[in-house]
Image 1: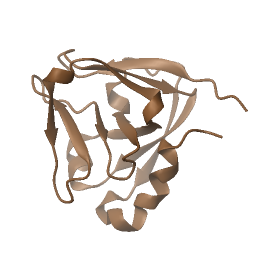
Image 2 (image 1 turned 180 degrees about the vertical axis):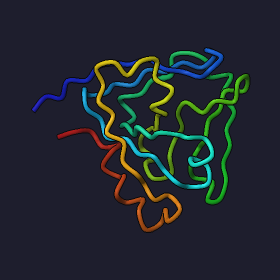
Image 3 (image 1 turned 60 degrees about the vertical axis):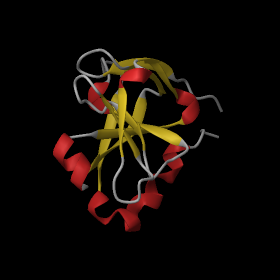
Length: 134
């Protein structure tokens, strides 16, 4: 079975950090209620490593970790926007902020609530998202 993916561009507010992510026309996304995501309005689009590429601004990225220090939250040092990061739930992939895509034209984002306040009980439900499709 083939999975048609289209590369979509995105980035931070200042334009100093840019990325591309390969997505199908319909993608599962999560709106999380954890302490970090609830404050920022982050919409998670989790993809395998092979479907993400940083195209500009690696030197501008600043890393923030907390709690277990597994998740690598990456922010633009100029504007402070976190357009993607390495999630604790999917350390073999990337979480892209759906709100940081340049355009969602032709993309159906199916946004589901994720209970990140109870992360340990729910994190396993995300593990499939960073796996390559069969």
